[in-house]
Length: 221
Image (cartoon, rainbow, N blue to C red; front, side, top):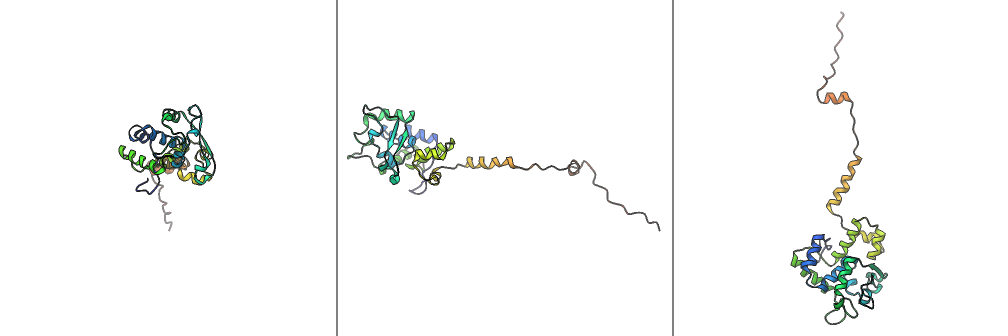
């Protein structure tokens, strides 16, 4: 859990996500920004640098996919296209009148909103609803972990996340105590069946007398 800038951003529960979007995030722009991060598993810088044309078509309609351009990705590795699911589509449709001419999330003084501003917005929202340990990275980690929990193959998750190294991707995925317990509990199938003879069992519980001790032969002298 992240605290004072240290550690990983926590994996958000469904209840925490509900709190953030219903009571924590103050306006439609903020809800849209973090919905993009949650439903596309993108990094905060990838979200704030999105262009409006990469989300809406020329008639202002929400596209089927959003585009994260190579130049805005970490390491500038490759452009990614992420399907826009219905939950995100609804938020983007409502937000379209407020979107910028160039950037989806315009800044106050031109350009786009900065990543640091997004982090401050989230800190205020979390404080408002009493959530500790979350960061802007929590949305990406939550999304990728949810996909993993649903048995999505790592190679497919990597297509969404943009990772080129599956080892790096695995570092994002959370392992919860109940999953560890389930994994260890599955070992019960390996328990050996120990069978003892019926006679030994009966003796153990006192159903048979112990074998008599051998008696010496009578002295013939």
